Image 1 (cartoon, protein in one colour):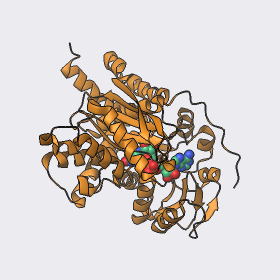
Image 2 (image 1 turned 60 degrees about the horizontal axis):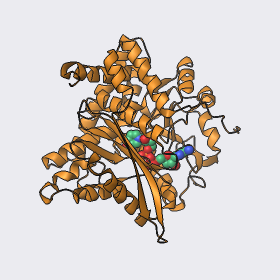
Image 3 (image 1 turned 30 degrees about the vertical axis):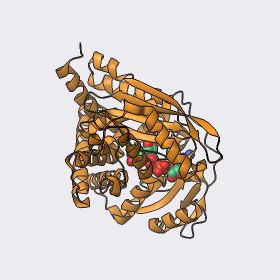
Image 4 (image 1 turned 90 degrees about the vertical axis):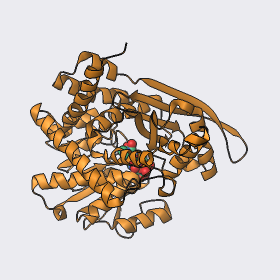
Length: 427
Ligand code: NAD
């Protein structure tokens, strides 16, 4: 299987792609025109430029963003991304998706996203710490436990969240420091994190895989998955799916791709990647070209890396019956139409990866109430919440005779519309 590199689709703007999805759902449901106007733009766009002292003593200037899309249902909520391609347009799209995701999940949160344009793999631990603390300081009172609550995303993890929390806590009066722990979620357990938060996005996705398979009458042992991305979302989705009895036959990350039609041993693959920093060379599978990953024979495709990976060309070749969007915006608008024409179902990002923000909500609640729930409680509550959103999505899609993505938006938009109608627009 060899392919020339796939020609990229015309992607004018990620925000435009997000708005096309939103407008389609708004049309399908007849969304109130005033609410449509409000949701078409974020409420606040914070851009900060700040210097960081590097290991060699130089000062480098970094640019960071915090886009607050909407907070009618509760405090702004969304991750922080560290990656070279981060720009205002990308963060705007990701912030809008958070508004629709939290509304669909029925959480008392709004939507936001943040990021810094940087290459974390080129930064030492010390530099990453200074970068994170300087960014938090620059954001100042734009974040807060009742105002805007960041979480990890691509290129960040619990360490970064603990640095953010500590920096923020040191900027508030001593009497408020304990309360300040709830300013971020996705923290380590030692610093106020929740059981089950690290795996939550992959876990939520796997609960949906289980429910989808049950509806189709397919045994989990008959399911094969191809997973793109072997970071937080991709790794946990692959691990949990294989523990449930499914076979993960291919994995693809930014270093390459491997496959094994008998199923990859995910814990061994993790050890291999931790040691060698790359997927290729894994003794438990064969190395394939990254482009061939999209041709792999598997019932389920899980794009769990970054946006715009599933292009038209790849959508024409995909052999899966269903795509579970672990990543945000992994499918281009053109590819989305091709998948639909080919009868390939798409479980949309705002549903498929909502497990992370659902457990972030649980972490926030635990922090506020000084509680600590066990893993069984977290997983049980997550399962219930994500399956409820799945059922509502299926119902809305069937009522409006539309695809699941539009159905998921309709559920979220109805909640937002109701809140605006009852509260009115001040003054
Ligand atoms: P991560 O940084 O932990 O992992 C990203 C993975 O993507 C890595 O394995 C990397 O190698 C791979 N990747 C990056 N560029 C690639 C490319 N061009 N081709 C192939 N692979 C590539 O990030 P994450 O937290 O797992 O996030 C992945 C996606 O899931 C993002 O879209 C993110 O917004 C979304 N998401 C994350 C969470 C969360 O809780 N972390 C929650 C909801 C959604």
